Length: 165
Image (tube, helix red, strand yellow):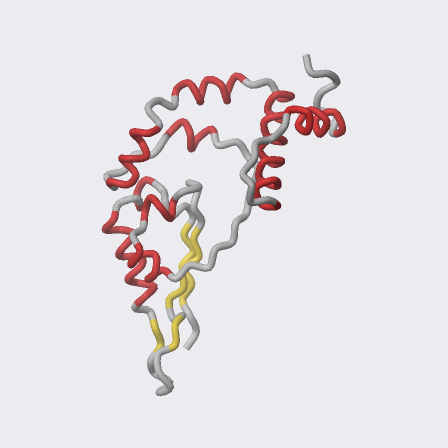
């Protein structure tokens, strides 16, 4: 039998953030096994392909059992597009883990104002900083910060800035 693929964009979206929805999806995938071939059960009659927007979605949405039922294969991909809508809308969920995270981020209005007021050149600097920090965190385990000189030299070489003023 051929597997059924369910493609779900934004599994951490507003309509799917509650525990019941996540557990139902996990149960659907976990129980979608093919045991008709006589050689034991074969996973994969129902397969879920999903994207997440929140960097901490796995920690916020799923307990250990739910995550195990999904049996995810993670592939990190970036669009390198600004997160205006995600920041503006924020997380609104009844999940205890999400509510705890919302308390830590008390007010997004300041972030929204800063992001929307950045000039194109400044946006490029922030994107380059994020890229360099990501590359640095992947290549080293020290967790050190980005030296200003490294950022400045990279910005100058990419012609994002002409001086540091």
